[in-house]
Length: 232
Image (tube, rainbow, N blue to C red; front, side, top):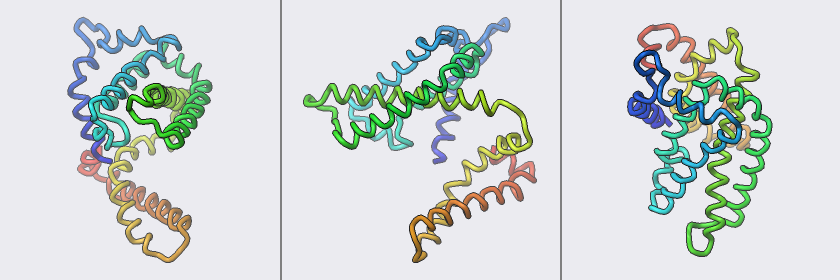
């Protein structure tokens, strides 16, 4: 999963001119653009670039680009831009908090609908099922935007405070992300060979991995400046 760190690094460099504050203390280009999406209906327009990219990828047979987490390079770029837009504008954040509940409900409905279409009807991009394909593309992109709005909205509402735990967890996020795959594979390779129930294996792998990762972070990574720098 570490490929996404490379993506973020490259995206940040490419988008830096749009992120940076302009001369004479003027807001960044994206900050100025965010004013167009302060209302709930305008906020939904952000789904359009995702739909266009999604169709472009399929029409040009570039589905292999979704091998990294189910979305393509260009979609991830826009998702990062949307994250900046959401947090650079207080009015947008207020809108997101205001529509968080309806966004969550719609996201769940569209997710279930998408699963039924994708695994039940299985539409393909062909002359026989163009309408179903377009519907699925819309559902796929719209539910992504709705999940982003719902998660950020509820997070801003209920997790926007300071505490020792959140401060500790915030610093541990990136080291945890970097370590998790290696530790999971290491412990999983050992545990899957046990002759026990699959559910028990899952619980053991998840528990031991969490304890190991947090132990490595708290005992080693957090205690030394070099490791703190290397792990972000």
